[in-house]
Image (tube, rainbow, N blue to C red; front, side, top):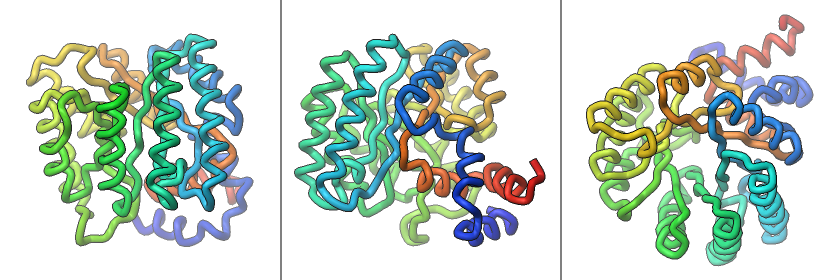
Length: 298
Protein backbone atom coordinates (compact mmCIF):
# COMPACT_ATOMS: atom_id res chain seq x y z
CA UNK A 1 0.00 0.00 0.00
CA UNK A 2 1.41 3.38 -1.02
CA UNK A 3 1.71 6.55 1.03
CA UNK A 4 -1.51 7.99 -0.39
CA UNK A 5 -3.53 4.88 0.42
CA UNK A 6 -2.12 4.69 3.95
CA UNK A 7 -3.12 8.32 4.45
CA UNK A 8 -6.65 7.56 3.28
CA UNK A 9 -6.96 4.61 5.66
CA UNK A 10 -5.71 6.78 8.55
CA UNK A 11 -8.27 9.45 7.67
CA UNK A 12 -11.19 7.03 7.28
CA UNK A 13 -13.00 8.26 10.44
CA UNK A 14 -13.03 11.77 8.92
CA UNK A 15 -14.72 10.69 5.68
CA UNK A 16 -18.51 11.04 5.93
CA UNK A 17 -20.34 7.73 5.79
CA UNK A 18 -22.56 8.94 2.89
CA UNK A 19 -19.42 9.54 0.80
CA UNK A 20 -18.20 6.00 1.46
CA UNK A 21 -21.71 4.79 0.64
CA UNK A 22 -21.69 6.65 -2.67
CA UNK A 23 -18.53 4.86 -3.76
CA UNK A 24 -19.58 1.53 -2.20
CA UNK A 25 -22.53 1.28 -4.61
CA UNK A 26 -20.08 -0.07 -7.15
CA UNK A 27 -18.95 -2.85 -4.80
CA UNK A 28 -22.18 -3.70 -2.93
CA UNK A 29 -25.41 -4.88 -4.58
CA UNK A 30 -27.69 -2.72 -2.45
CA UNK A 31 -29.13 -3.24 1.01
CA UNK A 32 -31.94 -5.66 0.12
CA UNK A 33 -32.34 -8.96 -1.68
CA UNK A 34 -34.32 -7.52 -4.60
CA UNK A 35 -31.39 -5.29 -5.57
CA UNK A 36 -29.02 -8.23 -5.24
CA UNK A 37 -31.18 -10.39 -7.51
CA UNK A 38 -31.16 -7.72 -10.22
CA UNK A 39 -27.37 -7.46 -9.99
CA UNK A 40 -26.96 -11.23 -10.34
CA UNK A 41 -29.34 -11.29 -13.30
CA UNK A 42 -27.18 -8.69 -15.05
CA UNK A 43 -24.01 -10.68 -14.32
CA UNK A 44 -25.60 -13.89 -15.57
CA UNK A 45 -26.54 -12.08 -18.79
CA UNK A 46 -22.83 -11.23 -19.22
CA UNK A 47 -21.94 -14.90 -18.90
CA UNK A 48 -20.74 -14.70 -15.28
CA UNK A 49 -21.85 -16.83 -12.33
CA UNK A 50 -22.28 -15.35 -8.86
CA UNK A 51 -21.83 -16.13 -5.20
CA UNK A 52 -24.17 -14.15 -2.95
CA UNK A 53 -22.97 -12.92 0.43
CA UNK A 54 -25.20 -11.40 3.12
CA UNK A 55 -22.96 -8.77 4.69
CA UNK A 56 -22.16 -9.17 8.35
CA UNK A 57 -19.51 -10.59 10.68
CA UNK A 58 -18.48 -10.95 14.36
CA UNK A 59 -21.96 -10.86 15.87
CA UNK A 60 -22.41 -9.21 19.31
CA UNK A 61 -24.77 -11.90 20.64
CA UNK A 62 -26.34 -15.26 19.74
CA UNK A 63 -29.63 -13.71 18.62
CA UNK A 64 -28.13 -11.86 15.66
CA UNK A 65 -27.12 -15.00 13.69
CA UNK A 66 -30.78 -16.04 13.55
CA UNK A 67 -31.50 -12.92 11.47
CA UNK A 68 -28.70 -13.80 9.05
CA UNK A 69 -29.90 -17.40 8.76
CA UNK A 70 -33.38 -16.15 7.82
CA UNK A 71 -31.86 -13.89 5.17
CA UNK A 72 -29.89 -16.79 3.71
CA UNK A 73 -33.05 -18.91 3.63
CA UNK A 74 -34.60 -16.16 1.50
CA UNK A 75 -31.50 -16.04 -0.72
CA UNK A 76 -31.79 -19.77 -1.53
CA UNK A 77 -35.47 -19.34 -2.33
CA UNK A 78 -34.76 -16.35 -4.58
CA UNK A 79 -31.98 -18.15 -6.45
CA UNK A 80 -34.34 -21.02 -7.26
CA UNK A 81 -37.37 -18.86 -8.02
CA UNK A 82 -35.43 -16.50 -10.30
CA UNK A 83 -33.35 -19.33 -11.85
CA UNK A 84 -30.11 -17.55 -11.01
CA UNK A 85 -26.71 -19.07 -11.73
CA UNK A 86 -25.50 -18.48 -8.18
CA UNK A 87 -24.48 -20.10 -4.91
CA UNK A 88 -23.78 -18.49 -1.52
CA UNK A 89 -20.85 -17.52 0.68
CA UNK A 90 -21.01 -17.17 4.47
CA UNK A 91 -18.75 -15.90 7.24
CA UNK A 92 -18.45 -18.10 10.36
CA UNK A 93 -18.39 -15.19 12.81
CA UNK A 94 -21.65 -13.97 11.28
CA UNK A 95 -23.13 -17.25 12.45
CA UNK A 96 -21.66 -16.91 15.94
CA UNK A 97 -18.25 -18.58 15.78
CA UNK A 98 -16.75 -15.68 17.74
CA UNK A 99 -19.12 -16.55 20.64
CA UNK A 100 -20.14 -20.22 20.54
CA UNK A 101 -18.70 -22.86 18.19
CA UNK A 102 -21.57 -25.31 18.64
CA UNK A 103 -24.17 -22.64 17.94
CA UNK A 104 -22.29 -21.75 14.75
CA UNK A 105 -22.20 -25.40 13.69
CA UNK A 106 -25.94 -25.64 14.30
CA UNK A 107 -26.61 -22.68 12.02
CA UNK A 108 -24.41 -24.19 9.32
CA UNK A 109 -26.28 -27.50 9.55
CA UNK A 110 -29.54 -25.63 9.01
CA UNK A 111 -28.15 -23.73 6.02
CA UNK A 112 -26.64 -26.81 4.42
CA UNK A 113 -29.97 -28.61 4.75
CA UNK A 114 -31.63 -25.61 3.11
CA UNK A 115 -29.03 -25.58 0.35
CA UNK A 116 -29.66 -29.29 -0.31
CA UNK A 117 -33.40 -28.65 -0.57
CA UNK A 118 -32.76 -26.02 -3.22
CA UNK A 119 -30.01 -28.00 -5.01
CA UNK A 120 -27.50 -25.36 -4.06
CA UNK A 121 -24.11 -24.98 -2.44
CA UNK A 122 -22.33 -23.00 0.32
CA UNK A 123 -18.78 -21.72 0.64
CA UNK A 124 -17.50 -21.03 4.16
CA UNK A 125 -15.39 -17.88 3.95
CA UNK A 126 -12.06 -17.61 5.74
CA UNK A 127 -11.66 -14.77 8.23
CA UNK A 128 -8.61 -13.73 10.24
CA UNK A 129 -6.23 -16.20 11.91
CA UNK A 130 -7.98 -16.81 15.28
CA UNK A 131 -10.70 -18.64 13.33
CA UNK A 132 -8.65 -20.55 10.73
CA UNK A 133 -8.44 -23.92 12.48
CA UNK A 134 -12.10 -23.95 13.50
CA UNK A 135 -13.25 -22.81 10.05
CA UNK A 136 -11.37 -25.69 8.42
CA UNK A 137 -12.80 -28.07 11.03
CA UNK A 138 -16.37 -26.93 10.30
CA UNK A 139 -15.71 -27.16 6.56
CA UNK A 140 -14.59 -30.78 6.87
CA UNK A 141 -17.68 -31.58 8.94
CA UNK A 142 -20.05 -30.02 6.41
CA UNK A 143 -18.27 -31.61 3.44
CA UNK A 144 -18.46 -35.06 5.00
CA UNK A 145 -22.09 -34.70 6.08
CA UNK A 146 -23.59 -32.78 3.14
CA UNK A 147 -21.08 -32.75 0.28
CA UNK A 148 -22.09 -29.34 -1.07
CA UNK A 149 -19.36 -27.41 0.75
CA UNK A 150 -16.34 -25.26 -0.05
CA UNK A 151 -14.01 -22.99 1.85
CA UNK A 152 -11.16 -20.50 1.34
CA UNK A 153 -7.39 -20.44 1.72
CA UNK A 154 -5.29 -17.26 1.73
CA UNK A 155 -1.94 -17.14 -0.05
CA UNK A 156 -0.35 -14.65 2.33
CA UNK A 157 -0.56 -17.10 5.25
CA UNK A 158 2.56 -19.16 5.97
CA UNK A 159 0.39 -22.18 6.77
CA UNK A 160 -1.53 -22.41 3.50
CA UNK A 161 0.74 -24.91 1.71
CA UNK A 162 0.52 -27.20 4.75
CA UNK A 163 -3.25 -26.74 4.91
CA UNK A 164 -3.52 -27.78 1.27
CA UNK A 165 -1.65 -31.01 2.01
CA UNK A 166 -4.23 -31.84 4.70
CA UNK A 167 -7.36 -31.10 2.65
CA UNK A 168 -9.94 -33.89 2.32
CA UNK A 169 -10.51 -35.59 -1.01
CA UNK A 170 -12.87 -33.65 -3.25
CA UNK A 171 -12.07 -30.28 -1.66
CA UNK A 172 -13.41 -27.15 -3.33
CA UNK A 173 -11.26 -24.14 -2.47
CA UNK A 174 -11.36 -20.45 -3.23
CA UNK A 175 -7.73 -19.29 -3.32
CA UNK A 176 -7.16 -15.59 -2.68
CA UNK A 177 -4.26 -13.41 -1.57
CA UNK A 178 -5.88 -12.46 1.76
CA UNK A 179 -7.28 -9.19 3.04
CA UNK A 180 -7.06 -9.18 6.85
CA UNK A 181 -4.12 -7.47 8.57
CA UNK A 182 -2.25 -10.44 10.04
CA UNK A 183 0.85 -10.52 12.30
CA UNK A 184 4.19 -10.64 10.51
CA UNK A 185 4.97 -13.88 12.37
CA UNK A 186 2.30 -15.80 10.47
CA UNK A 187 1.85 -14.02 7.13
CA UNK A 188 3.94 -12.86 4.20
CA UNK A 189 3.94 -9.11 3.70
CA UNK A 190 6.04 -8.74 0.55
CA UNK A 191 3.83 -8.25 -2.52
CA UNK A 192 5.83 -10.49 -4.84
CA UNK A 193 6.26 -13.25 -2.27
CA UNK A 194 2.49 -13.33 -1.79
CA UNK A 195 2.10 -13.63 -5.56
CA UNK A 196 4.63 -16.46 -5.72
CA UNK A 197 2.99 -18.29 -2.84
CA UNK A 198 -0.37 -17.91 -4.57
CA UNK A 199 1.03 -19.64 -7.66
CA UNK A 200 2.65 -22.35 -5.51
CA UNK A 201 -0.64 -22.96 -3.68
CA UNK A 202 -2.62 -23.06 -6.92
CA UNK A 203 -0.20 -25.53 -8.46
CA UNK A 204 -0.42 -27.77 -5.39
CA UNK A 205 -4.23 -27.60 -5.30
CA UNK A 206 -4.44 -28.65 -8.95
CA UNK A 207 -1.93 -31.47 -8.41
CA UNK A 208 -4.11 -32.76 -5.57
CA UNK A 209 -7.18 -32.75 -7.81
CA UNK A 210 -9.00 -29.95 -6.00
CA UNK A 211 -11.58 -27.74 -7.67
CA UNK A 212 -10.27 -24.18 -7.33
CA UNK A 213 -11.91 -20.78 -7.52
CA UNK A 214 -8.94 -18.66 -8.63
CA UNK A 215 -9.88 -15.43 -6.86
CA UNK A 216 -7.78 -12.52 -8.10
CA UNK A 217 -7.83 -9.20 -9.94
CA UNK A 218 -4.07 -9.33 -10.52
CA UNK A 219 -3.23 -9.74 -14.21
CA UNK A 220 -0.04 -11.60 -13.25
CA UNK A 221 -2.02 -14.18 -11.29
CA UNK A 222 -4.76 -14.47 -13.91
CA UNK A 223 -2.03 -15.28 -16.43
CA UNK A 224 -0.44 -17.77 -14.03
CA UNK A 225 -3.82 -19.40 -13.43
CA UNK A 226 -4.49 -19.78 -17.14
CA UNK A 227 -1.00 -21.23 -17.63
CA UNK A 228 -1.55 -23.84 -14.91
CA UNK A 229 -4.98 -24.73 -16.32
CA UNK A 230 -3.23 -25.36 -19.63
CA UNK A 231 -0.34 -27.24 -17.99
CA UNK A 232 -2.69 -29.72 -16.30
CA UNK A 233 -5.10 -29.94 -19.21
CA UNK A 234 -8.09 -29.02 -17.06
CA UNK A 235 -11.57 -28.99 -18.52
CA UNK A 236 -13.71 -25.88 -18.18
CA UNK A 237 -15.82 -27.53 -15.47
CA UNK A 238 -12.80 -28.32 -13.24
CA UNK A 239 -12.02 -24.77 -12.06
CA UNK A 240 -13.24 -21.18 -12.22
CA UNK A 241 -11.95 -17.65 -11.83
CA UNK A 242 -13.51 -15.38 -9.22
CA UNK A 243 -13.66 -11.60 -8.84
CA UNK A 244 -15.31 -9.03 -6.59
CA UNK A 245 -18.31 -7.04 -7.76
CA UNK A 246 -17.25 -3.70 -9.20
CA UNK A 247 -13.55 -4.50 -9.58
CA UNK A 248 -11.93 -4.60 -13.04
CA UNK A 249 -15.01 -5.38 -15.16
CA UNK A 250 -12.86 -5.26 -18.31
CA UNK A 251 -10.63 -8.03 -16.96
CA UNK A 252 -13.76 -9.97 -16.03
CA UNK A 253 -15.00 -9.74 -19.62
CA UNK A 254 -11.60 -10.75 -20.99
CA UNK A 255 -11.52 -13.90 -18.83
CA UNK A 256 -15.04 -14.87 -19.93
CA UNK A 257 -14.26 -14.12 -23.57
CA UNK A 258 -11.27 -16.47 -23.33
CA UNK A 259 -13.70 -19.28 -22.55
CA UNK A 260 -13.12 -19.58 -18.80
CA UNK A 261 -15.89 -19.76 -16.21
CA UNK A 262 -15.97 -16.79 -13.85
CA UNK A 263 -17.91 -16.15 -10.65
CA UNK A 264 -18.51 -12.71 -9.14
CA UNK A 265 -18.72 -12.21 -5.37
CA UNK A 266 -21.96 -10.24 -4.84
CA UNK A 267 -22.41 -8.84 -1.32
CA UNK A 268 -25.55 -7.08 -0.13
CA UNK A 269 -27.15 -5.98 3.12
CA UNK A 270 -27.36 -3.30 5.75
CA UNK A 271 -23.87 -4.02 7.09
CA UNK A 272 -22.18 -2.58 4.01
CA UNK A 273 -19.95 -0.07 5.86
CA UNK A 274 -17.47 -2.48 7.54
CA UNK A 275 -17.15 -4.42 4.28
CA UNK A 276 -16.54 -1.25 2.29
CA UNK A 277 -13.92 0.12 4.67
CA UNK A 278 -12.06 -3.21 4.66
CA UNK A 279 -12.06 -3.19 0.86
CA UNK A 280 -10.75 0.36 1.04
CA UNK A 281 -7.73 -0.86 2.99
CA UNK A 282 -7.11 -3.48 0.30
CA UNK A 283 -7.90 -1.52 -2.84
CA UNK A 284 -6.03 1.76 -3.54
CA UNK A 285 -8.35 2.43 -6.51
CA UNK A 286 -11.33 2.54 -4.18
CA UNK A 287 -9.41 4.88 -1.87
CA UNK A 288 -8.84 7.20 -4.79
CA UNK A 289 -12.56 7.17 -5.69
CA UNK A 290 -13.55 8.08 -2.14
CA UNK A 291 -11.11 10.95 -1.80
CA UNK A 292 -12.11 12.36 -5.19
CA UNK A 293 -15.77 12.14 -4.24
CA UNK A 294 -15.05 13.75 -0.86
CA UNK A 295 -13.47 16.77 -2.52
CA UNK A 296 -15.99 16.95 -5.36
CA UNK A 297 -13.51 15.87 -8.02
CA UNK A 298 -15.59 13.07 -9.54
